[in-house]
Amino acid sequence: MSLTPPVPPVPAESTDPAGTAPEPPDPPPEPVPEPPAVIPPQPSPQPHAPVPAVPADATSGPVLATPPVRQLSLFGVEAADPSVGDLAGLLAGPGELVRMGGTARITIVVDAAWRVHVLVAELARRGLTASWLGRVAEQHGVQTSYSTLLAPLAGAWLRGTVKRPPGNFFLTGPRLRLWAAAAGSPEPLGFVLRLGAADEACREPVGAALAAIGLPAVLLDAGAGGPAYRITGRRRLARLAELVGDRPPTAPPGQWPGGPP
Image 1 (cartoon, helix red, strand yellow):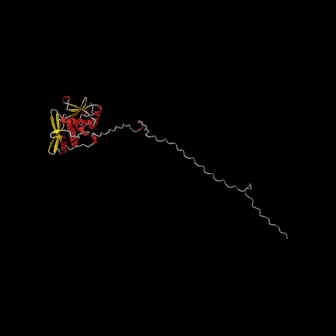
Image 2: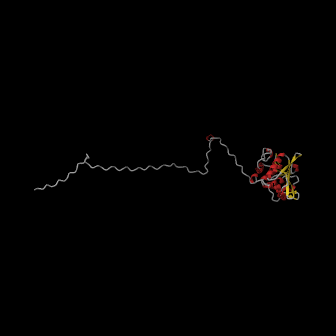
Image 3: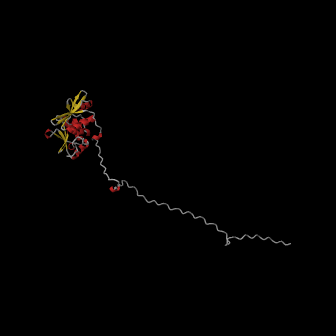
């Protein structure tokens, strides 16, 4: 008996018409990175760069100018609160001081009713009661009551019954304001601050105190309308107006330092 060798199996026919094996799929495309954002260059800050002006028609309302700020003076009326020591300004002028026991009073004669109103108000601000003595020959008197508040002034200014400024006497805005209210008046050559007719011992110290605050003045004798100190010059008159402060409501505009001529 003859043996027939086995026939190897025939592989199944491929369904691919081309008779080739299928190709693997293409790999996914790699992502393309986005370009970085471009930041426009910024101008470097300029120190103290000027602010451009805004036209008036670009705002909802009119453009208002800012008023200038007035600088306060070291010796002006705004520099300190009112005090009884300010009445030294009246004593630098024609004010009279009388002592009685531990009290004292001040009397001053003025030439206009508006001065009475100003002085009474100023004295009240310092805790002093004053009265109007009446009108005699176009003159008016203002007199305080006797008060212990005035005793220190009497101790500093009186040598017996003679009035003389103390050795450390000085002037300030409030003191000048009271002096101007009682005995100050403008004239064509400047502004005059009147002195007491018999207060010769006061003249030199008071003149030195005026010069110390930037108001050197000329002493007028009786023949020139004095005794008084006359302040002249535009800058000195402006300095005086700065020191005495705003005009009191009852003072005529032309009678206060800095007012219209």
